[in-house]
Length: 246
Image 1 (spheres, helix red, strand yellow):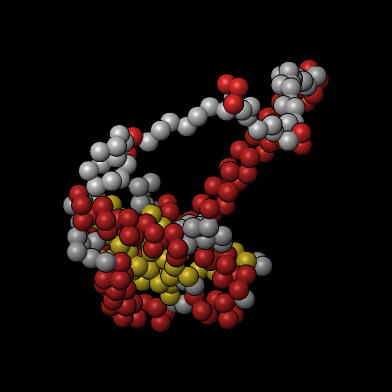
Image 2: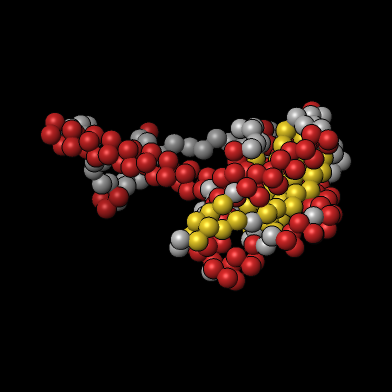
């Protein structure tokens, strides 16, 4: 059997002859890259340091930053003051309805968690509409201011006074039982009855009917307001002969 052939007459893979070198024993040089592709590499540029601003410019910028920081702090202080005043009645300088609702929610949450005693007084002025009708709204405003001042004088610093709108006021009393809350309501009624206001040379006075209700752990704001409001109307009905004589 000839050399390089298999038994079946085919060449085996191992018998493949290696490729011959070119004539003369010289290697074929690699293909030459076209001239258009042989672009020179850009030389590395030396690092250039950022020039520092002159001292006068730096000082001017620092002063400007300091001025802006002062203005920002003043604006934040003004915003905080405006936000606080948003919960205050501008006429009487006590809490308005929004502020009262926020404080009542907080108070109920505190009572529910820690169990202290607290009460809500609900006051409605007697004969106030007649003052407005007879003497005008400016006279009514003078009476409202006087009433708010006298209520504030008869409560503690920990208590809260609010004007709910019109001639209605509310007082949140802390660490007080039901009997003492009713006594406080009577005390405020008597104080309001003694209060006078002067407008355009006329001395004005009014009365008040006050109802009291304790804050209970399971109350929501509507519950305690409804009880205090009902107690106030019961008190107004009981005082009807007095109101009619005013």
